Image (cartoon, rainbow, N blue to C red):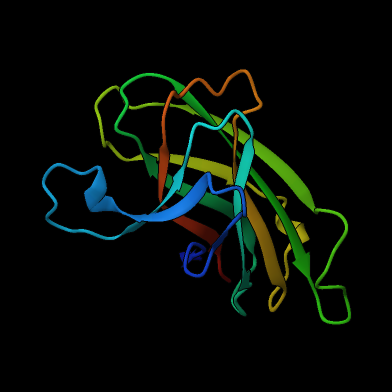
Length: 165
């Protein structure tokens, strides 16, 4: 059995608050050697999100997680990330009114600016099946008292990680 990762950020759509947006990494990076787009989540004191979708691969058998790699230019504080998702099979609504699951992870700044940090959401693997459309929303939950990061959290990558047969 092998583990696989699928990019979830490609095509992710920020909410309409203006507090989540795509920006060049070179805006905050010092060395500017490998500029690329990052998804910035401001410190808004509200729940702000980006959402997207991906097809669950044909070789999916379980152990589903969503892994986010993030950074900040700050050295202290914590960020609260929420993940809500719905796996939609053929003959089910692609405009769902409920989630399969809503998960929360709190992580602290690395202590040194711009260091990569990973957060992992463990999904209920039975909620997903091969060829489902996985709808998701990744959020920074600034309403939570535990979110003390006084600035932007930058989401560099977001993956669906799973095992095959």
